[in-house]
Amino acid sequence: MSTNRPPTLKLRKFLFAALLILICVLIVHWLNEQNKPWIVPQEFKSLKNPLLPSESILSSARQIYADECAQCHGERGQGDGPEARTHTPLPADLTDAKRMATVTDGEIFYQITEGRRPMPSFKRRLTQDQRWQLVLLVRSFSQPSGQTNPSGNKQP
Image (cartoon, rainbow, N blue to C red; front, side, top):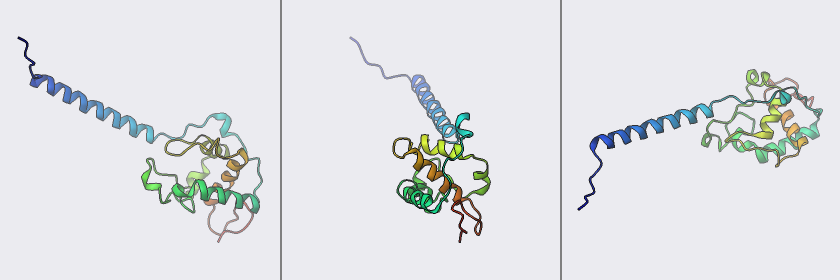
């Protein structure tokens, strides 16, 4: 006659502790992955934008930005779009002049091209020229008010 014995209290404690440790490890790993800086290959860092700023290019970029980026990065690039708070990490504030001064055009192009969770890749959604147009627009967001933006016009 075989009886099914319930797991011993010691075994249940061990399994509970193992489960807690696993959950903690997964949370730490997830937080670590979310806060990692972008790793941009060297060949992208040195890329220069092949497009010259003009009002027509910036106008096209504004439309692309409104369709593809503003919902997270906000209308003016401040990282305050209607969907921003639903993402971890939060979208970057593209108006932060100190931060933007530390990244090259090639790095911005790479970030737009490859994406990183939760930001999608735009490699197949946008042409290369459209991605470079966005680089020009993103750069304009960090220009101080009253300074000349990439279109050559004064900002309000």
